[in-house]
Image (cartoon, rainbow, N blue to C red; front, side):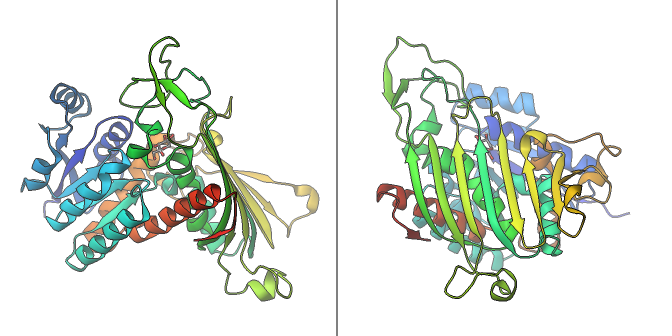
Length: 406
Ligand code: SOE
């Protein structure tokens, strides 16, 4: 019997994403057959007390207080980057150049320039068998993976409309603290990059088409907030009386978009002479939609049918098939069958999965690709395309919503 080789992981950062990734590294080999077995070798963070507590809680074997030291270690094969966006480029480039595989949280970087550099380094590293992936974890939600499969199988025909919303409400309280997610120098942007980036990636991935241009509005509703706040940076109450600091990111982002043409658009999509050949889209991302907790929603209307998804009901997908009687209406598919993406490795039909499973599936797909010596997806190049859309949205919003090509 041959023994499965380990994949020794070093993770940087240990807050919200660090917790989700730790759980995924630990769980993936217990429910899926992997070509390499992940080991939680070391976790890095600047605060020794904090990183030591995180290592104990999440099960990491050792700690470092400088990510550079993690990269120098020869008992680490993969660096998992769970830190704010302003640190991604330095860590990812150093890791890839040192021959470590990389998993990097989204958005890939805080600028197109950084993302381009990271992509160049990633592509050169891939030639040497050193791979990288960006953590757009929603791709691994079974219902969205099923949506992708249905679009690829032609069940919707040519896509005409993309309607994507990502709605949360944890910033609605004007006294919620000023955390790193509200500081442009750390996060790059606000709702746009934090949650809108997921919608852009999901829309491009499922349709197989890139966004080619946008017209956008950005708004910051609360301009100053109480300083302080926890490491996780999601919600809480900062107290109304203490010092306040400026919010330097958007609270809400809206944009209309065009996608590139589908190869059969002229024949099937009825675009008309001189009309748009690809789908049109409307995107909305906000952390001020009171009552909406994690409503990552996507609706696609094609020439043959429609699908609709809402993460608040994440184990199901709505499907309208125009080949059926019109009064058949939308049907709710419970995405819990063994034939559905990822679900067969979990519970009996109908028992459902949660937020954390997306991260576990991300590890499964990453380790499977590394084991096969293949490029995992989304690659840094895929994430660079998302970064270009984010930049186009900001440029359009700064220019009175003027059309901006990506
Ligand atoms: C991580 O993938 C992430 O985008 C977080 O950064 C968001 O805040 C979260 O709400 C969705 O997931």
